[in-house]
Each structure stands twice: as structure tokens, then as C-alpha cells.
Length: 76
Length: 255
Image (cartoon, helix red, strand yellow):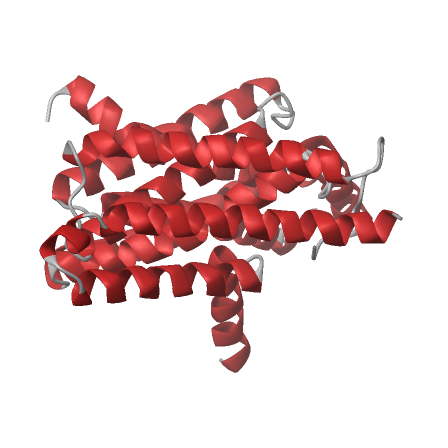
């Protein structure tokens, strides 16, 4: 029973998370957007989607850059 | 919903599911060719039944019970995490940092492993059933997730997502059955790249809607968001190629 639950958890986790830092970064970006949208003015809330897009794009590029640097360290 | 609207609504789920079906078909094909077709087909049918139960139970519960704003927020979060995972891996594969998914190699390995396990003609082939069941269930879980995520907006969206996934399954299975060979010609990484960007775009769009953000032109903003993801990922792939020494290829799972 425990191993079956463990298997389901591992599969679900693996479905969503490949790189822990990227996943945590995405959650942080979502939390920041939610905080900004819920505490700002109407205009800020209405445009919060673009903030999320900007945060996520920066996150992806930064994460890939880090991956590239790690890979370069491995081959050099 | 007319046929054209249905086709447009079903396309994201169709493309995303097709990639997963290609991977599942490779394993089922390897089992069928080495050990006979009855056992893997039973395994596949059982897995499809399990997945149908998952989609119907979770999908209907999500669409009917969870409040719309909360649902958009939750599904947006899951889609974003799922999409970024695919997008990241596809970019790393384009850059040569992670090895490309090789269906031919997976097929050969699977065939060799299945042959080494032998086959007793008098007994039911449990190995064939279980291997096919596990492969279809594993890849199919991602299809179920895709269907639930794309279909979470409502009953019409759920129907379109289910149709998209079923059509993808039928087409991939029919082509594989006709060729009796893994579908190596499918540009899997390009598809994963596109689907990763698409899922991430839907994730950003729906999470935004969930927290009360307004997108200009509503769903017409999705292609713009998608364009931003594609452009940023393409630039990132070029940047990575520039970072690595000429001709270097790294086989590193955790980078």
C-alpha cells in the first residue's frame, strides 16, 4: 500500500517537477503576482498577468543559463 | 459546438497527447512484436480504462465542484509547472545538453529486455500485460493531466480536450500498427518545445484570469503570450549553444 502511494506521489511529482529550482521559482513568481494583484489598485490587478509573464520568462532564461554554465563546467 | 470550433478547441490537447502516445506506442509495439499481441493489448485496454476513470472522476469533480476563479488559479499553476518542465527539457535537448529522445534506441532496448525474459506458451503472458499496462498508464497519466488541464474551463472545453486526446491516440496507434515500427520520424523535440510553450502560455493566461487580471482581447492574448515564450526559449537555446565549446555534447540529467 505504502509503495503504491509512494509510486503515485513520485509519478505526480515527476510530472510537474524536473528541476526543483525552476519549479520553486515558478511558485514564487505566481505568489508575487498574486500578492501584487490582491494588494494593488484595479489598474495593477488588471495588468498583473503581464507581470507574471515577465517574471516567468526571466526565470526560464536564467534557469537555462545556469544549466548551460553547469554543462560547460562539466565539459571543460 | 460546430466541427470547426471543436477542431480548434481540441488541437492543443491533440498535439500534446500525440507526443505521449508516440512514447507509449513504442513500448506496446516492442511487447507485441516480441511476445505476441494479446497480452499487451489487454494491458493497454486496462490502462485506458484506468485513465478514463481518472479523467472522468477528477475532470467532472473539478469542473462541477471547484469555484471557477479558484479552478483557474489551480489549473494555471499546474499547467505552468508542467509546461515549463517540457519547455526547459526541449531547449536543453536542442542545445545538446540533454540527449534527444530516441524512440529507435528505446524500442531496441525494450525488445532485447523482453526477449531475455523468455515466454512460456502455456501460460498467460503477465510480463507482456504488465509492461504494456505500466507504459500506457505512465504516459497516459500525462495525457489525462493534459485533458483535465485543458478541459478545466468548462464542459465544452473538457469535451474538446477529450476528443483531441482520443483522436491523437487513434491516429498514432493506427500509424504505428500500419508501420509496425516505432514512430521515429515524429519530430518529438519540436513538438515538446511547442507544447511546452503552449502549456506555459495557457498556465500564465488562466492563472492571470484566476487572480482577476484582464487580458486585452481575452483569449486573443494567448498567441501573444505564446510568441513571447517561443521567442525567449529560442533565444535561450541560441545562448546555450554559444556557452558550450564547439562540438561539445553533454549527457547530463541534472544540470
